[in-house]
Image 1 (cartoon, rainbow, N blue to C red):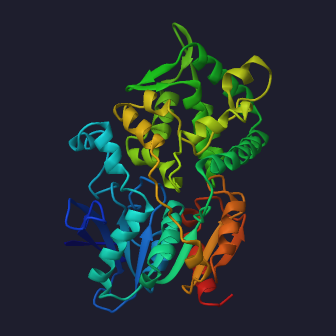
Image 2 (image 1 turned 60 degrees about the horizontal axis):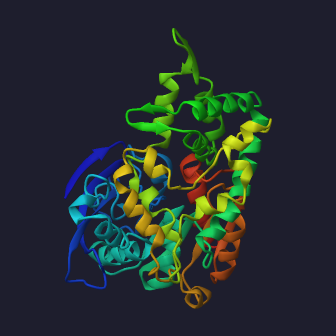
Length: 431
């Protein structure tokens, strides 16, 4: 362990060893990293623990600088563990560079099958007694971290003192097809709202898509196509995303001796926004997190898109309608255009075809839940369907919801102290 100070916080880096396959505890082991945070001046106090589970899948825990955002509020009363879930951050990272150590695509897919919420929760239950002495802890789950928290309630509620969820109540029984069938209309509404705010972007997006349809570009090995351009719509799920997208589009074209071209500034911004180099598990595991009951996910987002032909750029350009951006969806073409994913295409295909996914949620146990739970449900959330979330909330005994349109999906980041205060008040019956 190593400790160091930042403004208002003492951080301690901790590493834990856990089984790759929890059904074989004596088998291969992997390393999981967590960053402990405690308020300066309180390092020697006996404080209750709060475990933070980041959104994703595929993202390590946020790297805070001192007592900023919600962490500053949390360390007033908790000792916090910011966990890099297995395969992310410093936790035995899984990416195009490391996965070939497993062997070929088949071996890689078999390995990654152990990187869903069920395994993450079992990691947490091995780590908890090492930190708390066996006492239950509070879990704060953002987005996919909330999915993990619901799995925790299903599998090991004895490890939980309270659960706080922000934008992360999953459907308990929806197939991946159902998830995306609900998602495309939400995305379309977000795009319509963006174009209403910035009507000049309608023609600009058409110009960019038409240019890319004729001549896809290449930036640092990242091939930009109309579909890749449309995927910038993922920005629209954040509180400032519409404005950021507008500013990105305004730099799209530049005059050159060879005529009008897409600017280097624009291409670099798009590459940065759409590359999976920093979080490849997001692409590899994105549909697998919905896999249950021995049903393949089968590239659900790509298949379901056929039910929403308005999202095809080429068709939109043949008429005078707007080019629609897409949102949080992963498609086979991602593994063709992104150099961080290209070597993993066959692995992704095998995961999409996999049929041995076990159920993730125990509905009977959730219906009998006794752990205090509070969840922020963002009414206009682009990433997690509100109807699905509220149905799940009603299925978990005692869960209290705060339904708000004050924030988008990134509410914990944008309004962290307020969001955390509200959820803590709900689980403590103070509101």
